[in-house]
Image (cartoon, rainbow, N blue to C red):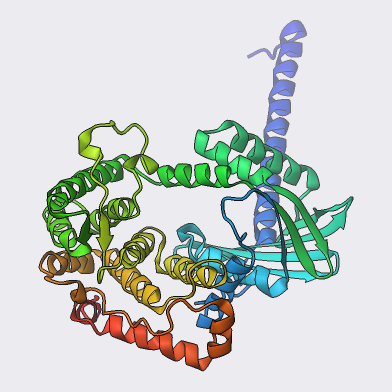
Length: 461
């Protein structure tokens, strides 16, 4: 066959050249893709580690918990309804303690560890975030440096492992987060308002200084919105059902007076929970029951928790004084502690309850061991009511059959009730003293020895 000549030969050369060019481009792209993949792999390896930079602190000690409670009280205003600025200064130990407590009580953060160090007008922070891949656990280790600059604390550098993160990326992330918070849902806007309530953040003298604009209205709105964020439609229906049943019990009890024992509510409510748990979660039923009961006992409307509830007689029960041992305050302490423990966890419930007693000792009615008894019994019930499905169902059956208040709360010892902070300090020194811990231990022993709780705790799987 005669080889191509002239135009045909030139055309063949052109085709061959195009093919070679495409092949070179393909090889170049393959090489670039391989290089990019390798670069990403190296970046990933540079940002993660097989070991955490911050060891997990583990369970907080009772001394740590007492310190957090005192910190809350020391930085609370004497009147929660008053407006104005509040200055808060935290040293390294206090900042680390609050961070450990917060992470231990937020489900998504319980495996995360963080540590801070304040040095003059500088601060350093480390955080280790675990990520499990099969049997392997990798840690994203972050470290940051802050410094006082132009009157406020500013981020100077941020690293993920050995990889420095450019300031431009950090700033863009901060701005995007802030913009989303400002323009998102009503609940998020309340969070944004609270964020703006921190008017200054400064570093100096080995302390973190915060100036808070104390706005009770914003905090009240935030509380209402935050509650609703975590209420699913199923939870909403459960709450409405229990609140309506509480209203039925209250209307019947109101025919005999304006004061009623908590005993009039618990057996009927937990009987309903036991029936409903045949087709749903006993833990979820118990949680909604205690939340609805807490609203009623504290004279709060269902509208405090849920929007869009009809204003009719079903959800407008008569307000009665719900008591334990003929005391309304004990009924409120018990049910509130149970609801908080069921919703947020026993750790937060204990800290809030104890902080309230210390606050009362300083500003209002005085420290009360009988209130502490109701708090401890309530958080024990709330914790067991939501510990797991088996214990939740068994508790429903037992509370369905209780016949007296003494079955779920021991008779409080009123000795020393109403102590001022000065009297408390004189007698007990502080809440880490052996004398105080022994008194508190006696109350815990009385609660835990009640058959309702003692035998139930031994049945945990």
